[in-house]
Image (cartoon, rainbow, N blue to C red; front, side, top):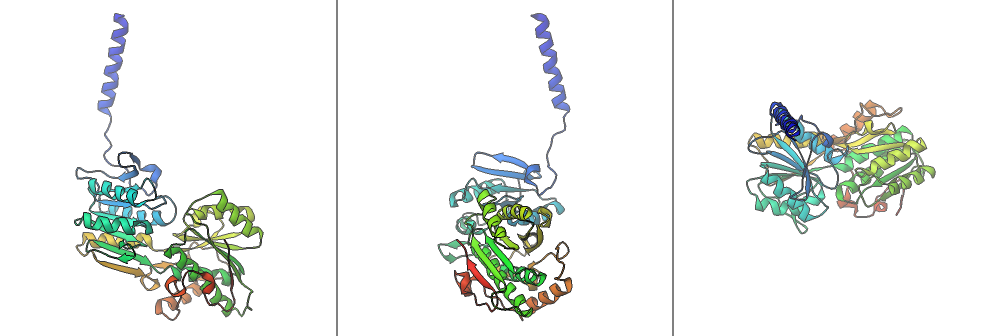
Length: 386
């Protein structure tokens, strides 16, 4: 027994010495990949991940909506803007994912971010209209940057002096994508949106109008270009979404604009099996699949980066909202990674200049209403699919 006790004591001392010699980790390497920055926070019912630590906590925070920061889409683009600024300026930062899709869960995540030391919080997505409206009054010393949303009380917008709302002219990005697809030679198109929120609707309406404009320029006859159009009702990668996309491709659709976060992953899988193509959304998704011929992008990274820079420069545009257009380089197609054979960079530049100058006008959701079939087209025939 004495010998055994001696052995155990020596083992304990060795473990203690090894622990004392280990270097403490006070900062994780900056990364937009959630798997490299995982930290769960169970007391608030949220998931959180951090980049950098300090005695005062995390100055910059982002709270995701129904997606994740590695969704290769909306949330990731926003996080990359925050992460870039924070990394360049050595500022502590963290992201949070609400436990569920509800106002209460979003408010819990905001509370946690403020408790953690946040001075500025970025909230991508329509889910935050109500929660940020409550939080901007609850935390007047904290700044809020909403993406594709503005603080609302019911249906009434109310942007306080500590909040700034950023929107994008998605109808212009969608227009560019639809125009390019038809100029490339595709005549049987699809639009598969996620949930019919304003940003998704604007992408889709622009897509239809861009396709019609290109078809008219090519001298095509009424009905030569057809578009199947639907909202799947979620932003998920799912077997159901993949099956729907596969059925469209089997029915002859050549190119689907996948506009719904992870819905795009399902469409890409279907396209790979059918040897068809996809248009990505929000950010350049060309690396996600060889089937992605281009992406209708919003300049999420730069707009978030710039908003944070304004805050630290003492010029935070509180109480305002902005709609970023082609004139602001807020939307576009990533031509350097696009896989076009017929639609050229010169074609794109000419079209983009027309958007910037205002010589091309595009009807958005406010002008058209809820039904895509109410869009006036001369060549394109749109069929709304449940």
